Length: 157
Image 1: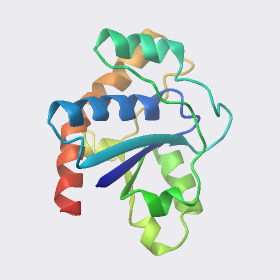
Image 2: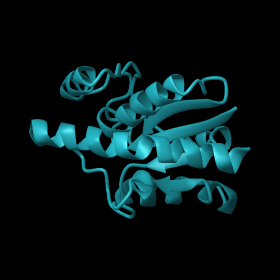
Image 3: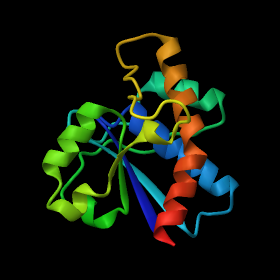
């Protein structure tokens, strides 16, 4: 089974949303036996908390259930997961610093590298903004979900 870990700063907005949306797409495509997803944060500020209530509400309106609990990424995640997906450049840099060895660093990618026309960009943190920020996160994550799934299936088969 191939595995993907989504990572943002606190694991309460962007990464649990990516986990929920991509899980939904995996299930819709009948790939649950082939792919697993999880999420974590580069910090442990919100460990044990559910996703931000605003993010859950926006995701729910689009049919996604964000059920994960926040946790901090660990060194063992680089061994456990085939792909570690950073939501932005700062998280990517932090993960590169944490990665144990060159092999782990090759597993790091940025989410927007799978969003057509948005390669190299960040999934912006909506935490301090309004409703439009949460909707923007959902738009980007939805746009990259299937290309990311296709990529993982290709590189792990």
